[in-house]
Amino acid sequence: MNPLSSRLRMLKAFLWIFLFLGIGELISYVTDVPIPGNILGMILIFSALKLKLIHLKDVKPASDQLLKYMVLFYVPYGVGLMSYFDFISSYWMVLSVIAVVTTLLTLYITALVQQKLEKHD
Image (cartoon, rainbow, N blue to C red; front, top):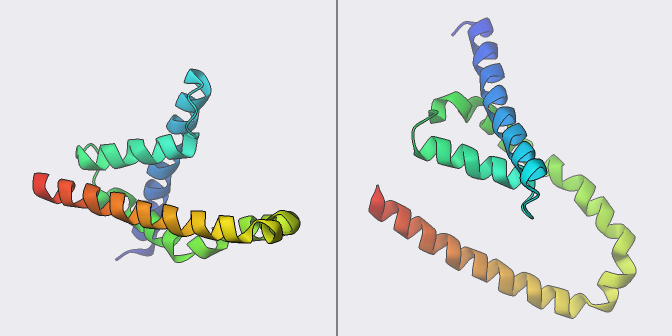
């Protein structure tokens, strides 16, 4: 494959992702809904993919690259947690229970949604 063609596909993929991010942010700002714009953008891009308005091949190059480096996106949050060390050390047991329960709940709900989506496909 031509290197220029590969770069253009990557650029197009990033443009799609950032377009939906921007639309989500705009909706969040204009309507003042309590959902962050990036979450709205993810819902919109998911819906567009599911409705076949855009194809997976159009966003896959950028999403693969973002997933490869996803761990770097968590570094600022990990560093930010250190400023709450006193709070965390005081309530570590409650926070641990909450983390386990919400993780299990998330896994359960995700499994239910996946089963429903597989039945409809």
